[in-house]
Image (cartoon, rainbow, N blue to C red; front, side, top):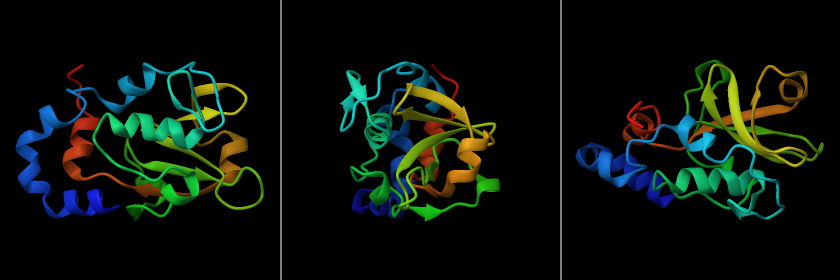
Length: 156
């Protein structure tokens, strides 16, 4: 959170360095596509296997964004975003176990989000799928406008 706040405060100063400081021009969809199919692994944070929050950490690390380890803690970061205002790079959270936030993914646009499913590994799903629509809880924007610009560039 400290890094996110510092980035928000220093955002205009960081803009000139965005091309070199982040994922070398890789948009979020391309970053996700590189790991689609990676198996699910509880506690996993590498391409050997991801759990949902580990997948988020892996992708956001490419953009030099620090986040907490668990989906519940990630859901407390940044600012709340209404579902109709989602932008690629926003985090989306779900209650899949009836006990509060228990699953998370990265919104990539067009009602699609990327996540590490416990049954299918890293994949892209639709927020309008009945399963996810019924379990949707909230979304958070955890990146600066500069990082958002990097996540949506087409220079890959």
